[in-house]
Length: 581
Image (cartoon, rainbow, N blue to C red; front, side, top):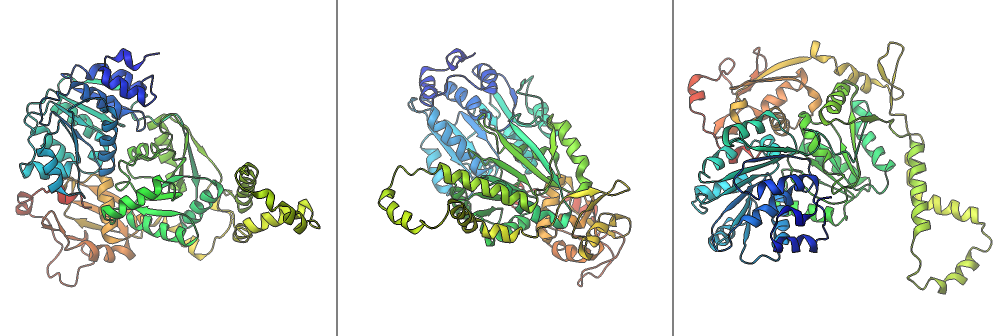
């Protein structure tokens, strides 16, 4: 088996690796480090999160840097503040025995004045998020002319977040670079385009199959009616005592609503979404890392770059619209060789997505029944009893109180004591789940899924909802498209966040270069138009109306808005503003 000594790293770096207790490199480290040490070859590394990619590029960078030259020689670009800080901290550990090598993290939400001051003192490696980096370039506070090595970490995530133009801008401003090192969990066409446009005959290394998932993750899914989705989530949390996990939602409104409901029910949970300030975000993440919080609920954008050890479960409250995002979600668990579970709550209409995911990540998904109320109580009961038996009683003067305890319980049998302990601990569970309905869907005589219980008027309306595209949808026009920097997932997130509507009210979305069409429940069309029409986006007025000339805003005087050729010519891209959504 290969050791770090065999890879050709400096003695100082090997000492740092030894201090960390590492002997053998991970597969991506073993294959990438010898290639990157040359410093002159473009490189593409495909591997899942949690496989040691930071060391795979961090150690070679530190090996190649010249400490005597006090200007940026290497640039690492990553999608989020959290990942930026994580990489910086890792590099600090790796360079422990190196003298004269300085690093600086530049990211939004922190003092740009302080970052500029640190850069001017002389740093060799800059770790940056795209937005803050471009701010510094435009202020002429950073000179990239002498940068030799550019690392794009989590490239697919940066592109999903709409940073394509930013990455192009950065690469065009590092004209004297000797190599680009691109690391990504997946290889969508957008990432391939960067390789084609900016790299020369890159060496490509894949650990596992392309777009494949971590083999240590157990992928599970539960089929639930839409109106039972929250209750299914709650039941899954209760069925897995000791869970330390992340719940993913599509919108920040869902994240906040579910967090509030679960908090009121007594769960240690906080929401992480784009409306939080950096100080609030740091506080939430601090509580989650210290395990003061059992659960974190987040949107995909807010969770970018989260790297927390020991996460046991990832729960998809809803499947992502972009199937490749699933790889990033599930990759939050089973890190550093540990095992983990990724659970998805789906509707029967989404069964085809499970088939797609199985092919994409080359893993089998296991369909499980939603636990019954009795199953939950039984699991909680035995979990508590195991904790009771394993409780450490070696530290404490418990023997002092034993005579009084023996006297107190002298007429109470062992069985009765156990019953009373169980009643004291589980009374709330037993009452809550006493008459719990079966949430599982079953096939009827015509091989269609039907809920076994709770088929009231509300659920009937919901069931007919799935066929409303035939007669209950209207089509909306909006003058935003792919030219505005949107992918389908980011566009969906934008319109849902701006309108505060649920994904269930939407039908098909047809995105074009200059504009898009959205199918939406007729009853919600007016609300969406009122929320979005007239808003400013990239210093341009957004127009939305019914494509067939239905609902109009009260102040509209003419017929339906159509984007004219003049507007197309006047577009002014502003990537930093786009990232607010």
